[in-house]
Length: 279
Image 1 (spheres, one colour):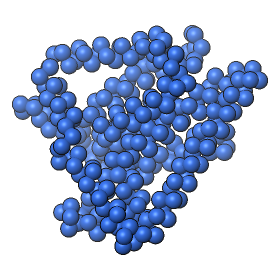
Image 2: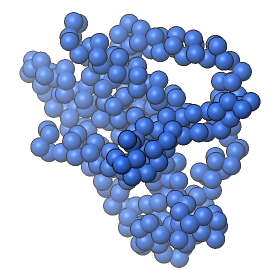
Image 3: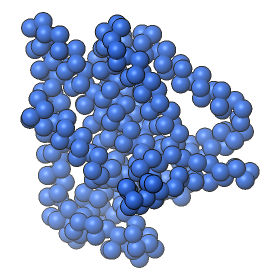
Image 4: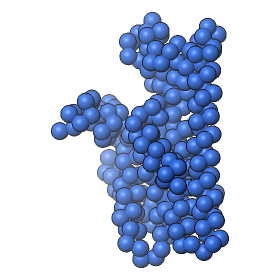
């Protein structure tokens, strides 16, 4: 059912095994649990501030709370360190305007519900989950080293091709002799930008990021003006602005070790959330 839709991997990711028992990580339609963990940042961080500002008794409060709880459980189930890093950075952004609301029952109760659910699952198989957590917290494994190794390619490439780099999608071609693989990507959006598009591409991308942050700032500014005018719609626009900002920050941070910003979902996020027609 899934394979015809994605055209790629359709089975759940098998991370490894503990005493013969498989460690499974959900990947949904993405093909990679780390990609799923990063992509989940958008709905989690965009919807959270909107949920926090919903009026008492609003018909969407319960569905949004349930959706956010489910999304958080899936985020944790991916075991994606990059996803959790992005989520933490996005929450730091939201902690500034919502520092009081994040201590309210509206936020704490669903979070405790997720914690109780996880405790009930982990408590039954403590040794298994302890080993899984220990594995994911290691910083000296082969996978972790690979994520940092690719950054050493940037100065080498810029020394030879500073302006335009190696060309789009040419990383695996030029570094096959180093990685030993014909389809090995740079495992970092920023490495890909510098290595494959050079300084020109990096400057263009930096301009694009500045534009995105200006759009989120515009959304927040519109929300403040609506609030000053007494317009009730400000309770949706301003939270949306903060949610977009948090999702953008979280995605930028998480892409230090992955390349999800080159996927379709990010362009859908951009065009639907930052389009002039939207605002």
